[in-house]
Length: 444
Ligand code: C2E
Ligand code: CA
Ligand code: CA
Image 1 (cartoon, rainbow, N blue to C red):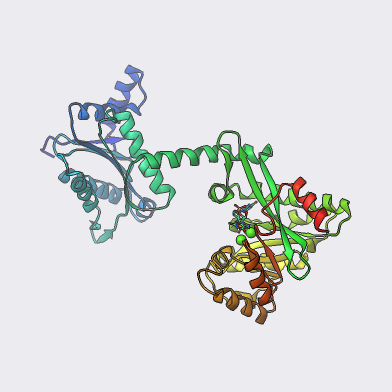
Image 2 (cartoon, helix red, strand yellow):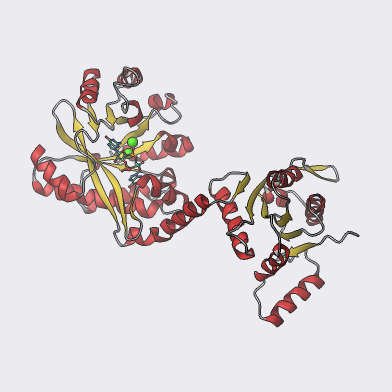
């Protein structure tokens, strides 16, 4: 547009001119290069001799909404408005590359100490909505930034870091701006290596199911146990479930893990039966999405039949989050479980939505009061919240378990409230099957 600024439209078959596309592709083919090198070379040439320099990737996060709400030429007009606004904040020497409609890469030479100004100027570009004819298009972006430093002086590294910053924003489902730092790198690397080893970890039994005893307060006997996964990773060592369960959930491995844990738990009950020391039940944790699976209950039933275990020895633990994600589905599953006489517990009670109405609506077999309410007893308060929750559970005639009991004082306190069950380090942490059996024999 008359200035000496250029926008490079990169890998965008819809918006790129045929001529440019053919030229670039030809040139690359002749040189035997991959198209990926295209922006790298351009960035490399820009950063030579620079002191201060940033690379930013701007990703429009609501691009699918815009695309589905626009004709192709409207899309084109939005893209060109975005480019115009971006070019305004760039100098002639800066670089702007567009990938598809929704992604822009830009480089900016900055003077010392005006890093923050450079970032704000990019953010400002997207503050006001874009206007095409009579339509307004608010645009929401993620901006990943990396900058030249004494250690980072090459384009490949800069680009990689910028991408990591974007990946981190995407990962946390956040919009806005993130500047790359080493912590992001460490976090994502660990995340990816956990994700990568998950499928095999489940298949090859790297994940072991431990059992934490659940005690009936009146008799001090083990009457149940909770199945808890333990992952001993060959390189990363022990990975706690609070770290890997969210990764399982986010990447579609809930079913595989759920099936595995259930099978292990039921087989364990079968093994305990053969000791003839009395019959206990087992509690199983579930992820919200497992409830969506129509095969969930049939699968439970099949496994229970296979190991000859009575259905009411299984307690399925659901969190408030699980129950309230999709109330209709939850009700259906609860109905299905009840029909099969499988029991249901509310896990982590009190920390979630704390909507009490469902206690009334849904028939719940056990309320598990979250550890956070007993954790600081007697220091923080005098247990008023637990007292209130236990009172309410009594109104609804739901038995109560307190999780995370660590001291005798805490146990005495909940006993005085009439709580029926507890689990916690005071009695025992989760044990592997062999250790559990030993403790179980002693306790009988
Ligand atoms: P959760 O269901 O609330 O399980 C209780 C957690 O509290 C367990 O942590 C247990 O080791 C810990 N705990 C028990 N007693 C005490 C105590 O006295 N003090 C303290 N500080 N902690 C205690 P864990 O095993 O690390 O599991 C964390 C969470 O990961 C579980 O919380 C559960 O939500 C999830 N999880 C674990 N295994 C599985 C699984 O196989 N499937 C699914 N879907 N989730 C699982
Ligand atoms: Ca649980
Ligand atoms: Ca819990």
